Amino acid sequence: MNNMKKFMDENFLLNNDTAIELYNNFAKDMPIIDYHCHLSPQEIYENKTFKNITEAWLYGDHYKWRVMRANGIEEQYITGDAADYDKFLAWARTVPMLIGNPLHHWTHLELQRFFGIYELLNEESAPKIWEQVNAQLNGEGFGARDLILKSNVKVVCTTDDPIDSLEYHSNLKSETDFDVKVLPSFRPDKGLEINLDGYADWVQKLAEASGQPIEHYEDFLNALSARMEYFHSMGGRVSDHALNTVMYEDCTVQEAATIFAKGLSGEKVTLEEEKKYKSFTFTYIGKEYARLGWVMQYHMNALRNNNEKMFNEIGADAGYDSINDSSLAKPLSQLLNSLEREDALPKTILYSLNPQDNYVLGTMIGNFQGGGVAGKIQFGTAWWFNDQKDGMLDQMKALANLGLFSRFIGMLTDSRSFLSFTRHEYFRRITCDLIGGWVEDGEYPKDMVMLEKIVKGICYDNANEYFQFDRVNK
Image (tube, rainbow, N blue to C red; front, top):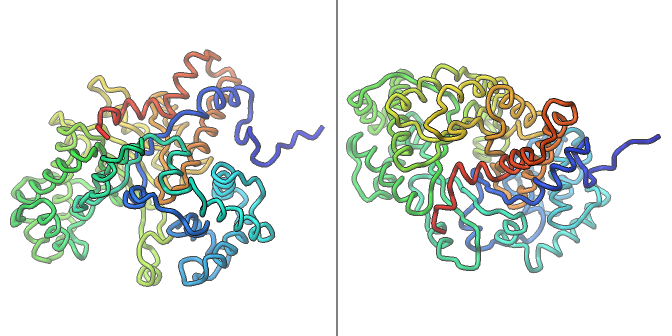
C-alpha cells in the first residue's frame, strides 16, 4: 500500500490524527500578533503596491539571496541591475534545488495562501506564474495593508531607531479604515555601540530628536528617556537590542560618564571601557522599560557582515551574516541580575542565533521568573537561521524540558516582506504536530479542554496577555 503523502496538502507537517485535530480546530484561525518584524511603517501607511512578484518577494530578502548565490546565480540577478523578470527566473531555477530548506515550503505557502496558486514553481512554470501573480498584484486588494488583513494580523511591531520621527505611526493611529495596530519598537543599538564610526553623529541626532542638547552622559540618558516617552505615546511597548556579544562589567555613573565623553570626542574606548559603558547604560535603559511597563528583547550571538568585500559593495543585511559562538551565560546572568536586584527587571524575551545556547537560555529564564507574571522571562522563538522545522522543534523541546512551554508567546516573522505571515502557519503546524505526537505517544492526556488552552495560548492568547497591546489606543 502506498502511504506517501501529497506535497504540501491540507495535512502538511501534521503527522497524526491529534495534530490534525489540534491544528484545524484550535490553531488555524487564530489571529496573529507579529511582535517583532522589519516592515516599513511608511509602506503600511501608503498601502504600498507591488509592480511584480520580484519586488514583493526578492527585494531585500537575504534568505533568498544566500541560496541563490549558493546555486551559482550571479550577483547581477540577485542584488544587481538585472531586469525583475530575469531575477524572478533566477529564483525559479533555484527553488527546485531547495530540498530540505524551509524556503521551499515558504515559497509555495505564499503562492497558495495569497494567490491561490498550487502549481510548483520551477523554470518551466515560472512564465505562467509570473503572469498569474502579477495580474493579481496589479489588481485590487494586494497592497501592503490588504496583505496584512488577509493574514488576520491584529498587531504589527516595527523596529525603529530612537531618532525616528514615527510620523507614519502617528498617521496610522488616526486611520479609521485600517483596524490593525502598527506600533513602534525602540532599538537603541547605535547609542550603545560607542566604538562604531558615526557614534557621535548619532548622539547629535538624538539631541535634535529629543529637543535637548547632549553635552554630558546625564544629558544622553535623559534624551533616551525622552524618546522612550515619545515612543510610549505612539503605542510603543516593546524594545529590541542586538547583543552580538553579550558583555557585563560593574560600572559607576562617574565611570560611564568619563567613557561617554571619550566616545563623544571621537576617541575609541578600550574593551574594558566598552563593557562598563554598555553595562551601565543597559541597566539604566532596562529600568526605564520596567517603569513604562515595556517588554525588553535581547537578540544575541549573530556574527554580522562577515564578507568585507561585499559589505563595501552592497552594505549590511545582504546575506553575509552567520551564527556567532561567543559565551553568553555569565554576562547575560549578570546583566539581568543588575536589574533584578533593584526590582527593575522588565518582562524580557531572550533569543540566541546559536542553537547550542538553547539550554543556556532555557535555564536562564528560570532564574528570573516571578512577580506573579506568567512567563515573565521568555525563551524567544527560534530565530533567523533557526526558524525552520528542526530549529523550531529544538527550541520548543528545550523550553518544554526546562520550563513552561504552555506559557510560550510563540512565533514572529522578523521579516521585511508582507508575504511572510505564512511563517506563522508553518510554525503552528509544527507546534500542533509536536503536541499531537506527545498525546498519541501517551506522554500527555488527550484532554481537549486543556489542549485547546495550550494551543491557542501559544498561537495568540499568551502573546496577547503578555504584551497587553489591547490596552494601547490605536
